[in-house]
Image 1: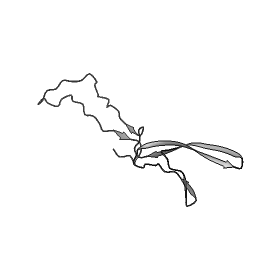
Image 2: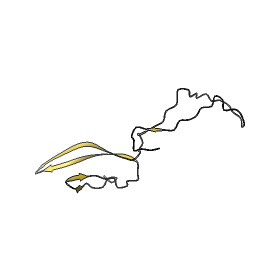
Image 3: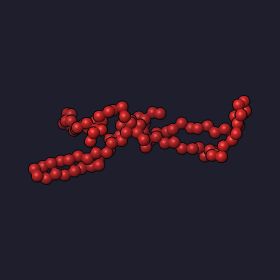
Image 4: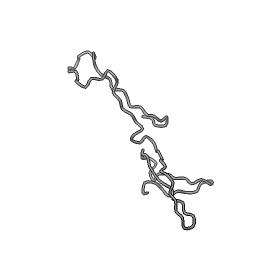
Length: 95
């Protein structure tokens, strides 16, 4: 897989790292185990890096109206919808 580096043995554990750790993505991979003439595959495993697509949620508030309201410069901010910032379902993904 081009986007993941080859696994390396680190203190008795096999470690898989993305080729580019700055990318915010989810990688799915399998492991292949060969014993003699027998080959087995295990997985799928998922490696999540950063804030990838699928971890950020955008939702409209209950009071959102898609019909719109016309406003002119200087008008009062009555019945104006404020877009809420996106949220994430993991604590290390800050937006």
